[in-house]
Image 1 (cartoon, rainbow, N blue to C red):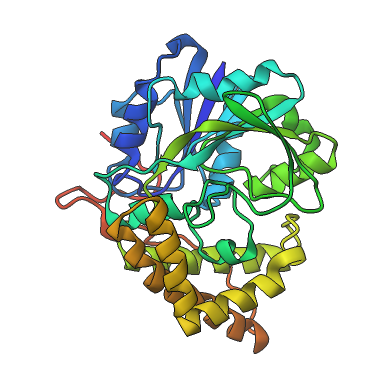
Image 2 (tube, rainbow, N blue to C red; image 1 turned 180 degrees about the vertical axis):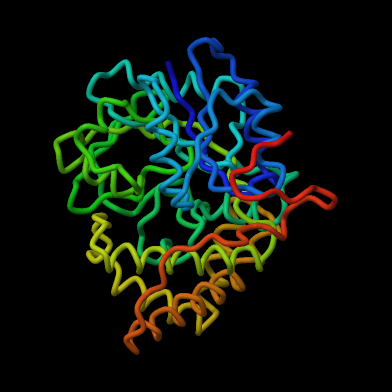
Length: 352
């Protein structure tokens, strides 16, 4: 049994494509379950979930995606758990079969796609993030990412022990410094949960770090991709970056995060700020990426980096002035993306 767990909140823009790709898998339906944890959607998210036959829809009162993953996992029953975000699309019908294949090696406790799938029909900003290989450009300067980047030609710049096993790379992780593995298509053995802290928030990269610290260090980077419909516009991106830094600062100050960012962060942040303000290093990076995959989407590299610097810089100033990080809030999240004419519903209200 494989449980695909999906946190949602006003996810109507992308959820149908996500669930359609799951239903298209060449995998026995009796061995697969879809568990959705909804944080109170007021768009057509729950209608779409019912239309595509989600096996269970459970509430997510804490509202964040990390809390939704934990709630959905608690309601699931599969031997394997696939973490699928509502803006993920499985690119082909044998995706799940390929992701499960490395588990024939008993040492492997988790699998993750090697890259983000680039599709010419996707919006330019979505294509840009697929080519960059990450959703936060700061990670490029930290050298810490976990998907193939067309800028560097590598899937991470962190030194890892890896072995090419044909359809996948078997990677041995160092808990003191490991790539940001754990999201957007990560599949893990349920048995791993008893060795990590995953409730009430499932912080994916922290879970992998904790697993490695507990001695479960082997994961597989499968030679396939996953579509991530992350953003259509720079406005959406700026909003998600504000959410990212706000949540990180809040949970870090509460000592609920364990991933070892500090090892690379200071020097990487300085490089990122300098490159963004000087502009020329960003142009060089975009040119390198364009040489590997020509696409006008590389033009987004500059505004994405400038927006990130502005958002993170503002958060750093607030922190330096002693303002406490605000608690995570999702009120009105993606409400502007609700399809025109869709009836609003009260949080948690089921569709008719």
